[in-house]
Figure 1 (cartoon, rainbow, N blue to C red):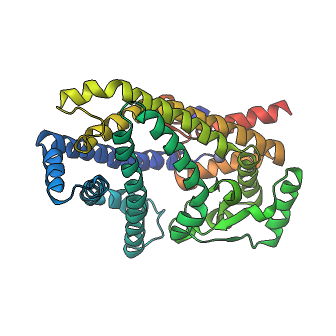
Figure 2: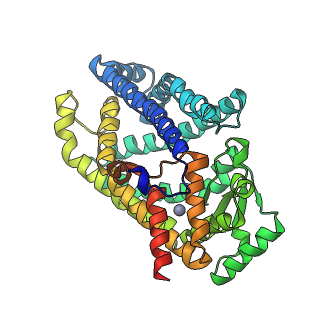
Length: 380
Ligand SMILES: [Zn+2]
């Protein structure tokens, strides 16, 4: 990005720091990928996976228990191996750049909680995969897709009431003045203020955020207390109008629909290609539990290839929400100030490499969002 074309509200020095921050994050992700790759290769190369399943078979014949034991042991080893990187990423780097408000004990507590949540969800998914592939050798890819879609809908519904409260507290918005302003926006739409909650992000981080979570009876808008504390009223209302647009246009449902299509495509492609890849390593049936490291590697590769499609879908709904926000607030100035603040305070990269933005950005870059707001303003 040429210095000249950078928006005047964006701090150039902070952008240099932002690049360093993202480089640090990238290093830990690459290290995690490399370690995962070595872990998978070791399990297959030295027949550890095969021998381990043979060993479990000597203890129990119940398939359900074999699946659970295999998953539990692998999960614990993998999570412990990657723990230093999780610590680097979630604690050291976040402190280095002044974002984390947690002490080590608080971080560790969260790490343990996510360990158990991921363990339970992972075990359910793992059981489903290896029970279904065993029952239906030809149509398993379709059954698995359908079950995974239902599972993700249930999880999206339960997330705000079951998982979120383990990490954060939500409460009604107390600021009377802000409430009135929110009510004004809500009157223009059909959203009730009861569906909008404040969430105590400040207990862990200085970063501000907001989101629509839940489905059906649990659907709600969450707005970070960090946002309410550190941002101007105009900026907060811009965020809220953005989230309200997500809410009223049912973007969560649309994203689930697209995710479901992706799931079916991934399972079907897997179904078509796996016999060749399994054959290379001496595996046959997809229901072979010992082949799981390969199963995971193929899936990760498919996800890697399909990533830009998912990102593009996300960005489409984010652009819609930005446009909806501007139509509601008619305040492009606050919207642009908000984007600049994301860059200056949270070290978002304003003008990322277009390829990286295309590949992985779930939101358009702040630079592009500013440009869209200026275009919107010019049309008025
Ligand atoms: Zn959004």
